[in-house]
Image 1 (tube, rainbow, N blue to C red):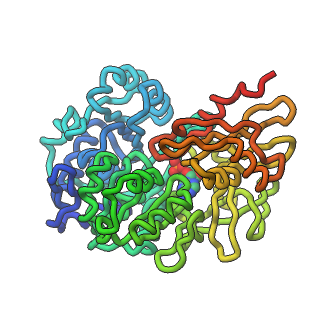
Image 2 (cartoon, rainbow, N blue to C red):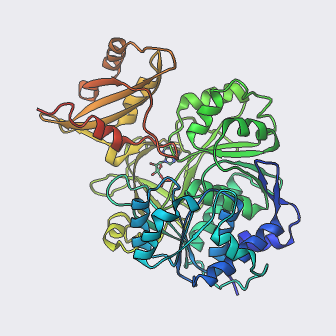
Image 3 (cartoon, rainbow, N blue to C red):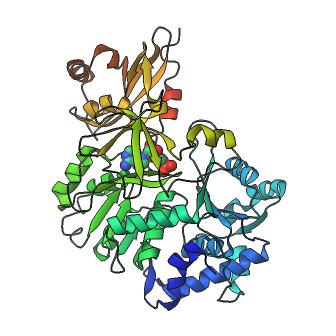
Length: 504
Ligand code: AMP
């Protein structure tokens, strides 16, 4: 009997007396104790009627118990469907209606609002809170510590992760055992993870980064995790000396750098800092190296494909790039209109093929057909450019591309110049409707704390660097950029905020 993910990630825990999880309060959970939690949770799932192929939707705080539900879903042969804890009941209603899970696991605080949602779509509703208590925990507590694991094949589905859905409805990306395992194996190898590693884990486990990259690698390689409910600067600084690796979104790095307590000494014990999920500013890369001596390793991936490219472990980690394709993953840059591969240096659509690429969107065959070619290449929606050495640079999402007066403008080209100007902390460039040009370029600029950038000087600097059609028609100061929990700038919000700026 085999179950690819269970056999590789969870079964080895049976023999492990060492810690798997270190908690913020100093507590630990050994590998063996965690596996018993997984098994009890698996029995609880079965008691709720969950069987192979059924969905288990989970919107709960990040705790060992929540992670055990992931293992339990794998053991039962079910499909794990984690949901962002920030989603409202109305949003959860869409996911539950779309995925029709047998069980919806929620925080007790959300129980009243979610009861009608679960009832409407025929799901059982149970609870698990941030301390690990709730009706699901009660059900699991009385269950046996061992479980007869359901057989699965590499092609069977293991998880649905819903895309963030900035354009249209969120789509359920169907990920198989083979997708997840192949990527974890590749990453563990190229990033040299071993059982000696202790990963400082502050990412959420409802997203591919924290769940499949962070957790799967640690489980696969027998490492330990300092498993934190979220990013809290004091806790990060306190626990970093006990870690060897950290995975973070770019905001983790800027927040660490903003604090003078984050020193070279504090990071001396670390082996590797990895960044992804949003672009890391070259400036952050440089500042981080100056402070700590570490060059952050930036990689690129997404919900539908897991990870695709990575800067090298040995060799040149180039700021502003996401590195070459991972072993076994094909990455090409194509002409968005024709799909023909483009030579290095030219900007086009990033397409990806490999064992990491998902099976399609749940119950959306037409969306799947639009984005997943018959030859297996997934059209990512990201625009990028290879350099002559095979390093990929992401220049933005295609939907963020601005077409003004018939010309293409890549926001990143302008953002990079803006970010270099005196007094500018960061920037975001968007296109908004314009009666003459179709779209007009608008730049939103966030000043460095306590500074007031000189907008006239910035305009002059842009004029010196950029063709006229690329120059913003408006420069706007803002206190901060709207970001989601993964640190991604929400350009849709910015476009909406400035939509009427040029209306006649
Ligand atoms: P998600 O599906 O939420 O993981 O978002 C995936 C998207 O995040 C990708 O399609 C990219 O647009 C963006 N992304 C991920 N990693 C990077 C990176 N290192 N640099 C730039 N964009 C990134």
